[in-house]
Image 1 (tube, one colour):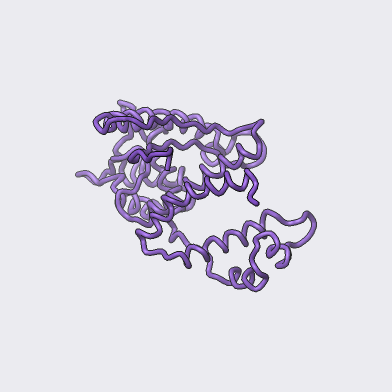
Image 2 (image 1 turned 60 degrees about the vertical axis):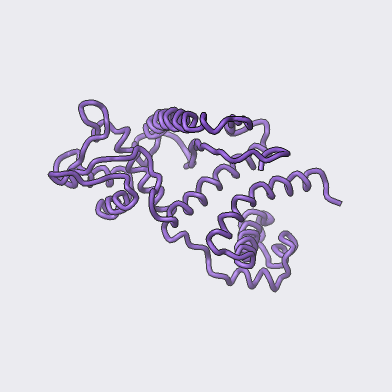
Length: 275
């Protein structure tokens, strides 16, 4: 018989899978392909995170943990690894460059807004911005990416103008799907942490009402976008001042990845609760 925990997990996973399966079917991904992806993740996580200290993880133990046969574990291990076609890297690089452009006073104009930057001339050039905030990516490659998604445009005289204060691809489904992999993974990892360590929870909140008229939604979306963007920019300034990629002299030990995400959602009401 299923335990209460197993039943709760089953219900939660069903809710997670509903929008995911909708996306898969819309993009022609059949169940067999999804099944192989899920098996591969089961095998990878069991191999990397559930080993016995001091012992190499065996195929037999992976089989016991995952419920897959030893033969199936071997088959799954031989499957080609997943590839987001660079979407995750583009997302991170472009987001860092835009954030630096918005927050770093060297790249702002006299009004405090992101300035119009020459590509390589002068102390506040686009090339220097990319070198500061995007590691070893070339300025040309980053500019091409930002132009492609509509985040910047060239203006008369050859300067580059920032059009968006955050990286949200307007074109290119591969990049939008890549964001799904990054952001949904972060949210689920936060919820998992809060389940395992209730005494030291990560911040995780939302506000939701289920009887709003259609006419109020445009105002809600605008309020969420405006206030959410302002909060993220404030947090971004605080974090960038303490990030050692930006400020190598910042003291401290270890290396952690941390952040805050904000998202808006809406759907038709379904009797019986949330979808």
